[in-house]
Image (cartoon, rainbow, N blue to C red; front, top):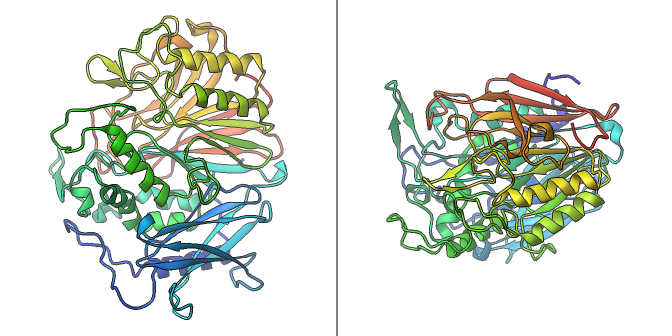
Length: 528
């Protein structure tokens, strides 16, 4: 299994050049500007925010676009960039009710093939008035295991005051990831920082100046639906992101900063920056914006979704991705030492769903995409805790009880090939969990890999909790809090599943192309 990035085919490069050219007309506001791009109200509809695809399987996928005015979304797909014998898909009418965004579901796609697509926006009152098409491409999941699977993951974007900096080329890690040409990207939460306003410039400890691209919605904490929409729209101002989205499908989940730092359902908070103190109100608004700006198969009622983030995305016989929502169903943050906690961090219903789907899975590898780590101690203030662990190395307490239940279930049902991937803590590391080191012993060994941030501040490594016996095999983290992307690398991870052997290799990568750590796992085992 080579670590060298594959080359992009000429046909695919042609599609990407057309995509970049089509979106280049999107005028970015000057650094420090107070408003997002303004669109003319006359003329033909435009899709200046690019296109993206999500939740791609062997036979289906979702295509997303945003218009600058009311328009009908039309998608065409083809086996080649010439679009001869193209198949046409009639999408939704885009209007103000969805902030002019829309998603079209593609079905009956060929497995394991490159799919070229273009999105055209049509004036709903005159179908002769169409916008310039925007192009993209993606690979469907393979039907057989010999093709193998390779994907990337990371999270934490535009956090801690570090937004799009044109002086350094914007979100550079996205271009590095695009050049690796993965089958898909798993975005592990904190897709935006709706609670993190940006200022035009920040002076760094060494005297250099970080400059932010600033929009009106990113100048304060998000409270209204439009402000949340503006936060999700902000990252699409970056050309690297738009080019990446046109080539690489995404599986996306959320965590806390899509709403507010360390939030939990039912929370009434005291923060002078907010006029709305009920986090459930804010979460509802953010969820609507999240569902408008990301193509997620289970969110849209129009596409048959149930309004939830947790789901299984099947990527051929080698891989199922179990996307968790560790935010919406959790109990309140607390000292986390209760001896009975049925709600935990997943909620009883999501835990039952996860057990059921893991038992049903016939994939060689079962990636559990968690938006928070298991054994890393993540505090919330001086007394409460934000994630699963609380620093007590003894028997499971609080939210650890639910994770212990899940790990016991995996062992006794002999569910093979589970690997945990997460982000959240703003550094990269690899933890191996084993019962011989643990206070709780009724589970099989497993790995948890951490990556990120992708475009945010870096932080020192968190302490480990000994309940599940973690051994920190590798860590790369800054020595002080909130190190800017100009001072410290950004991180993303790579997973490569070999089609012949079935081996799964994880590589922790730093911006700049360096592979910091690599580990190969063997298929068919309950524990590693």
